[in-house]
Image (tube, rainbow, N blue to C red; front, side, top):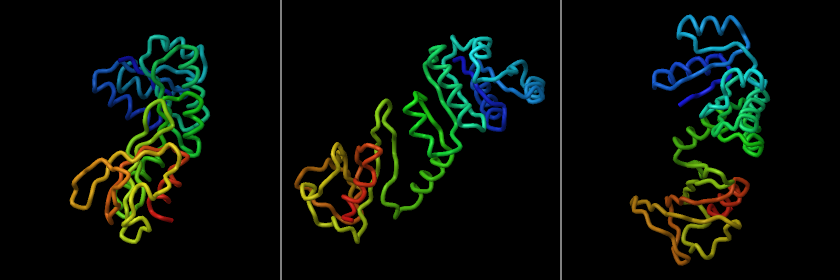
Length: 220
């Protein structure tokens, strides 16, 4: 696989080392000539001096044959532009962008970046997964849609304990896919299913309706 990486900072450096070790063909684009020279001295001619936002630089890098472009500079705007140029001018099948400001994640998706990666979001979701009392945990973002797979835990003090699914006003479009009971036995919920304390509910919902779903299942 031919992968172009934009940005030769720490993230870019360790990324290309890992990709090279896995046998990929990799080219790093970096503006700073000192960084380019340092990387080439260590890893061979894998780095090219140039601005990854510019079409001329991307053309020189052979972006039209790239399988993936990964933009990991420290500037969200540069990463977005590089991915857009790669996608729309050179038809790169897959683009990944590093995001420093998690508020930009939805914007990047809407503007065509295939995989926006926010370190802040990743850390928060790791924390959520480790905190058993956290009411909602993100499990998976469903590709090419605004839908997400989430895990909602029913606490003992939740207002929905003892209620049936049909008695709960779920947000429009939300679907309960699976319930894992305290005994760890999974079952597909029906309208008559009664919620119990410590149930884990696997649900599909839109990003915008997450909070509404959490409130509906928590009873508040």
